[in-house]
Image (cartoon, rainbow over all chains, first blue to last red; front, side, top):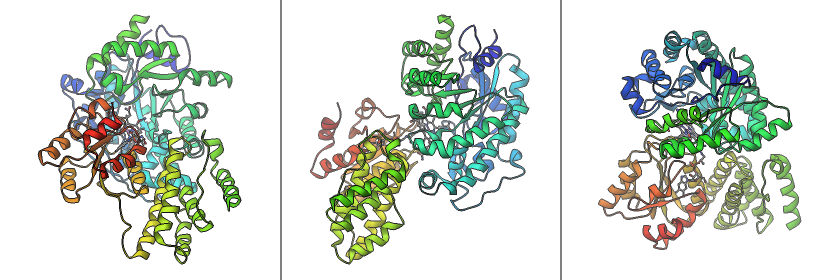
Length: 336
Length: 251
Ligand code: B12
C-alpha cells in the first residue's frame, strides 16, 4: 500500500497494511526550516515557502500526509481580524477582533481573494503537483465555534454562549460558511482530506452543554458541506462529549492522549458508531521534552489502545527534536 | 431562611442544567440574611444585570463591607469550589467574577474609597503567549479573596513585568505560560528581579510549565492550580519568602 491508499482506507475504516502515521495539526520545526530553506514567518504568508516547508513532513519525517497551513488565522484575517506576526519563532495570532456581540457580520463575496488565502491555495497546488501522487495532502481549516471566537474575542464569546446563546448564532453561521467555502477551495486546489481544528470547543473552555448546543450543530453542517473526507481535531479531555463529536459526522476524530480512548471506543460500539480515532503521542511531554525511547513506548501503547492512525495529539512545538518525530514513524513501521 | 435558600438552589440547578453537567455536590453556601443570600446567588449564577439593583437596595440597610465579605466574596468562593470540583466551567467563572466586581464597585462608591485590600499581586501572561485563561482565573480568585490585582494582561514583555514590580511593590508576582517557546521569559524575569533586589515570590503556572522548570530558577514557585493563588498570596503577606513558599507548595 502506498501512503495515499493507506490513509484513505484507514479513514473509511478499511483494512490497512500498517496504521498510517500523520500529523493532524501543525508540525513544522526549526530543524525542518533550516534543512528545507523555508522558514517562518515567510512560510505563513508565501505559497511557495509554505509548500516547501510542508514537504518536509514527507521528505524528512516520512509521514503518510503533508499539511498546510501552520497557523490558524487565515479565516479570521479574511473576515477582518488584525493579525499579529510572531517572527521566526512563533505563529501568527489574532490581535484585534473585528466584531462585537450585537453586530451583524457579513460574508464578503471576495472571501477567497482576501488576506493570505490565495497563497494558502497556491501552496496546496504546488504540493499536489510535486508529491500529490505519493502522499495525502491535508488542508487545514478552523472550526465554526473557534472562528466565531476569533471574531468577537474569547471572553465575550464564552459569556454570551452561556447567557444569551442566540446572540452568537450570526457569528457561528458566518464562521461555518467561511470554513466550508475555504475547505472546498482547498479540495479544488488539490487537498485530499480536510482537517477542521475547533480548539475553542475544548472542555477546558466550554461546558458539554455549550458544545452540544452551539458547536456541534455547526460542525455537523460543515462536515456535510465539505466535498472530501474530514478529520475533526479538538484539544483536551473530551470524555464527556466523544459520542457527541462522532455524531457530527466527520470521517475521523483527532484527540490528545488525555482522552480515555478505550472508554470512547466502548461507547462508540454500544451506539453502533464506527469512527477511527487519530492521535496517541503527547506533543509537549513526549515530543518536545521526552526521548525517542519515550516516544516509542507511547506509540506502542497508542496502537494497543486502538488508535486507527498515529499522530501527535495536537500542534507540535517548533523546537521539538527531529529524532523524536522520526521515532513515531520508525516505531509503527517496526511493529508491522 | 434556610428553607428559602434551598428552594432557590433547585432553581439554579434547573436553570443551568448543572445536575446533568457536573459530577459534584452542587451549591452549598448560604448567607446570613435574605438580602445577602440573593446577592450571593447572583454572583454564583453570574447575573451581571440583576446584581446592581440588589446591591443598591442592600446598601440602604447594610454596611458595604458586610455586603462585600458576606455576599459578593462569599459567592465567588463558592464558585471557586464549584470550579475545583468540576461542576462549573470557564464561562461561569468569568461571569461570576464580572458580577462580583460590579457589586464591589458599587459598594466602594458608597464607602467613598476602595475596600481595604490584603495586599497587591501583579499578574501576567508571558511575552508571545496569548493563552490567558489561567491568568484570568487567578485574577478572579485573588480578587475574590480581597487582594488588589494589577493585571498586566497577555503577551507582556519582560521589562513591563519588572517595571510593574518596581512601581506597585506587590507581595507576589505571577506568570502564566502555555507554550514551550514562551515560558523561557520567566527565567529572564527572575534574573532581572533578583538583580534589582526585588526578591518576592514569582509564582508560575500554565499548561507548559512544570515544577521542575519553575524551581530551576531563583524566586520561582510552581503553581499547579489557580485555586492555590490566594493561599500563596496570604503566605506572602504574612512574610513568607519565596523559599518558604516553594518548600510549602512544591517538592
Ligand atoms: C484555548 C487554547 C488556545 C486559545 C487561547 C485563548 C486564550 N485567550 O487563552 C487560542 C485558540 C487563541 C490558542 C492559540 C494557540 N495555541 Co493554544 N491551546 C489552547 C488549549 C486548547 C487550552 C488552553 C487553556 O486555556 N486551558 C485552560 C486554562 C484554564 O488552563 P491553564 O492556563 O493551564 O491554567 C491552569 C493551570 O495551569 C493553573 N495556572 C495557570 N497559570 C497560573 C498562575 C498561578 C499563579 C497559579 C497558582 C496557577 C496557574 O491554573 C489553571 C487551572 O486552574 C491548549 C490545549 C490544552 N488542552 O491545554 C492549547 C495549547 C496551549 N495551544 C498550543 C498552541 C501551539 C497554540 C498555537 C501556537 C496554535 C497555532 N498553531 O496557531 C496558538 C498560539 C497563539 C499564541 N501566540 O499564544 C499548544 C502549546 C504547545 C506548547 N506547549 O508549546 C497547546 C498545549 C496545544 C498543544 N499543541 O498541545 N490556543
